[in-house]
Image (tube, rainbow, N blue to C red; front, side, top):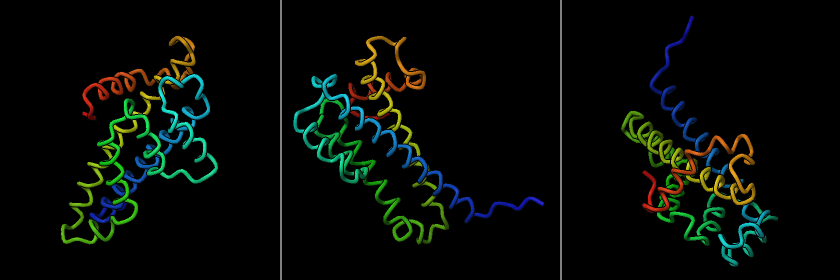
Length: 172
């Protein structure tokens, strides 16, 4: 006998989806940072000296999403600072204050579901942006598309999104 999903179950499923989307963003930004540091000679024209120094020092410490975003902001031509700030604010609300500020409200879970939906959409955009950034970096090393890693080759649409977003200075 299949159990019906309650409103509470639905709300918690959306929270779970939002948390997974946050982890995906943390994973891809961590990989981006690793690429920028590990292959700094290949990217020296893309990164600032301050970024390279601080990123190298951070290798031994814990890299939170806030730390990663702070480092990435040292390369202002390759990121959209307002988008990073907005995303980090939402992510921190989800991780640190969600129950107190949103879930424990009189909205019967509606505010929580709306927040999770909005956060998930923002996560998709940020993840795509950073996949496009990794695609760009990979092209610099591979020299041509045929030499790209098979997984990264699938990110060509993310690369287009990255380039358009940089031009417009926002994620659409």
